[in-house]
Length: 141
Image (cartoon, rainbow, N blue to C red; front, side, top):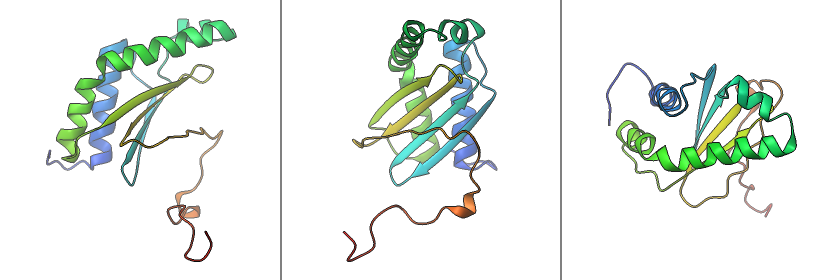
């Protein structure tokens, strides 16, 4: 595990930005890192080139951009998986990427056999409004 003054989330964000810049040549505008149980979600905002954004304006072009980024992520994700293991001390079992071409957002999910559903909200939600883990209370199943 890497020791630093940065939190694990900050280290993963930094590694993810470097990974994205290395594989696409584009530095994302911002990055969000969220960990819940055994699922790590990295959201890269502003990660598409102007040409990709223009191409994605048509449905066929959007599919091309999504397919390109999925394939690129699959072929290059080993280095980011290794970096995440160095930072967290935990091996990554699965990794996938999804692209929202209209907003230029790339979501990278690292899971352990879980189905991940991603919904990108149009605005920020204050963290204090969230509590619990989504599991039903005893007797409410």
